[in-house]
Image (cartoon, rainbow, N blue to C red; front, top):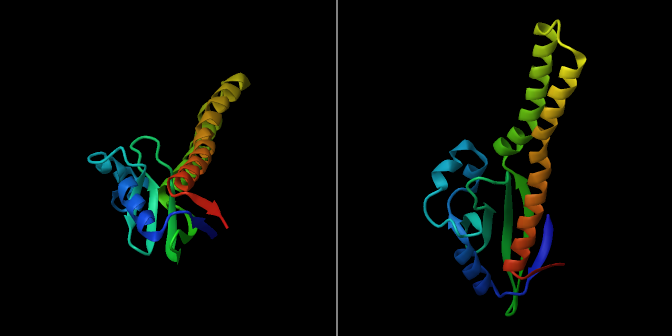
Length: 162
């Protein structure tokens, strides 16, 4: 859990939450049901739920979603700043889909080649497995997108680590 301080007072912080968040359950963004969220306010940076004391946000995207939820608590600090604690949690369906699908596909494809491909040259194995390496790139892309979303979150809410 990260403790941070926003240079916005609590009223302005909540106002920016409202201005930058499309309302809805953020867990849906990590599932195939995210397609149902394409209508409405797509220009907003975040998708999620918030109250005066806490929030649960993820990236508001249709195609390149990230399987993480930024969950936090908002606390009054003083007239010019707000204290918040933030934890980044995975959305399990999306998180596992990105990590397990490539491994499963690689395993099943190689099993198929070994059991059914008696006369296949070894070069075919190498070429086919090289293709499956590209299936692992979403893991690195989601890490990059998560860090970018955290950076954007800090910029929008004027946050400094404490």
